[in-house]
Image (cartoon, rainbow, N blue to C red):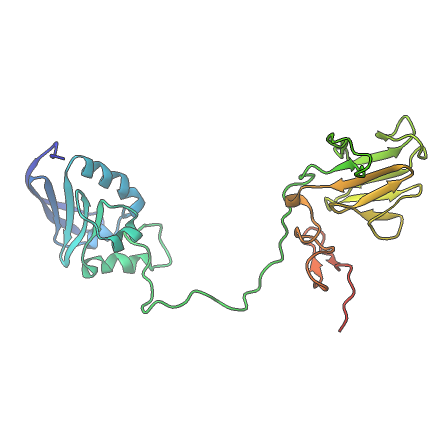
Length: 291
């Protein structure tokens, strides 16, 4: 594509800094290449330098116009922007085909500035890497135990009415969403889930502070959970109450139970205890460890 603009410049400049340093140089152009030559970069280093991210839009615009701007320092060429041919090795660093880095000797002062711990200035290059390159893998890193928990009450916790293959009509099973913090199940008119044939309040499902859904028995309830008057429900747990069979489900990303990231069941024979970051309690996995 033919260049849209041409520049003809012959300018010498001298800038006096408040610190007393002087920045001297020249700007010359005779066509599509503008060359900025600096006698010293000491004054330049006292200011915030543009980052590669700052220069990418400018370099692209210059390239579209067919122009090139190069910056030379006392040690040689520092950088070229615009209609340049950047090698593939540099594009990995600059993330632009329109930026070509200059000599390492000319860039060295900026690299050294990038390694300083203080200051908010940004350099033209990321901080230097030790050569030869060393593996970045560090063994025996203490890693925090995490879960796949999403948000409180997330995962659409619900009860699904279970039907066997002999009685299933092919219709989608009935569901009851556990939207309330306490759901009462029974035959009483005040029950949230009314099921004929059960006690007035046969059972409750409570959403506790640990974001668990806990079954509280008042009448006879059997199913796939441990003994006791209360049981934490996990996805797939069945509740048999009289003639009614219900299954608890919660989407995988929010279910605390293993193998989804929680403390019960799953994977292999023994899982080490985990400390719940929300309560600080050390919780077992419920399995038997045989030495």
